[in-house]
Image (cartoon, rainbow, N blue to C red; front, top):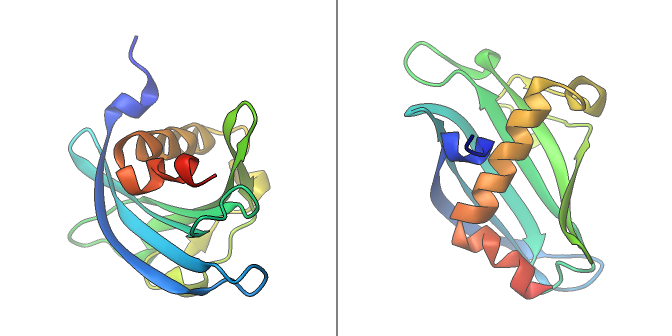
Length: 146
């Protein structure tokens, strides 16, 4: 049986330096891209971190899942937020309560932690994060920054 991340195809897209972290002074970066499931658009992701300071500051992820394409809009999608940190045993993710924030034009719904943990949505989101870590070199490089 293949692992779940094999059903996802990751398409890295843009990146931007987004300012300076107020507590450490390191430049912050956000990268984003798209995730396809069985050749259909399924999600988009945004990963934000302080460059060179990943061990001290978690990376913040926004994963937006739902329906994409003609005739769909923000009401067809919801977002999940996660914190990503590097432990002695490897990378770890924790789902946190989401707020739409700057992504309100993409997703109309922000999932709470309680709505995600232990659900099929959680399985998909963690598989997406795994696939992104494996197939987006910009995100994979986080481990080298720690």
